[in-house]
Length: 47
Length: 194
Image (tube, rainbow over all chains, first blue to last red; front, side, top):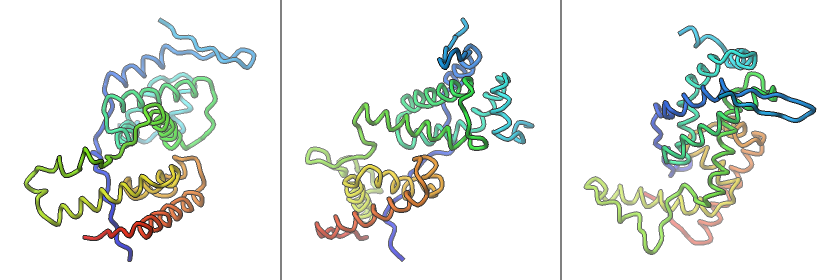
């Protein structure tokens, strides 16, 4: 059996993005409307 | 936690039909895996947050424009988007996520901890550094597969889904990566041992 020289990357299992990022994404999703007109995609962001 | 029993595909369908809560559930369910994957490549929390955000902006735009057609494969699809954004990031910064040893910077200059003075530990670390330098010499596609397989413990199926190539191509790249590593080792008569 060949020797394995590499080490496994030490990645913490509970890494999470910032709450602000998730909150922004949810707000962005609520505000965004995508409309297709004549094969063109129009993005509308509600204030 | 009834959300746990709803499959991703159904949540995606509900979201496309206007249920915003489904997106929150999808993010909550997969944020650790996606963010952890990005962080494992970038090693910077702020940039990882940016890439995570850009990933989901693409996801939201694609779903809202009804362009999504990968039924039942939500997570691999999102991971592939984040993988592409990571590649874009490194193309922009032309920075590799590996420590390079140069004449000015030796990996041993930051090894002042007591536990690292043990000879065997130093040899193991030196082997690891030598190996990483050898891996740096590989072509990008081979290096990518090797790092995902050996350092991130991903299966060839996961690698093929993330890189967008077939399992056979991923296996072939791994094989050529190992052959090329052996060639470099033979050419320079490098001894890896501990």
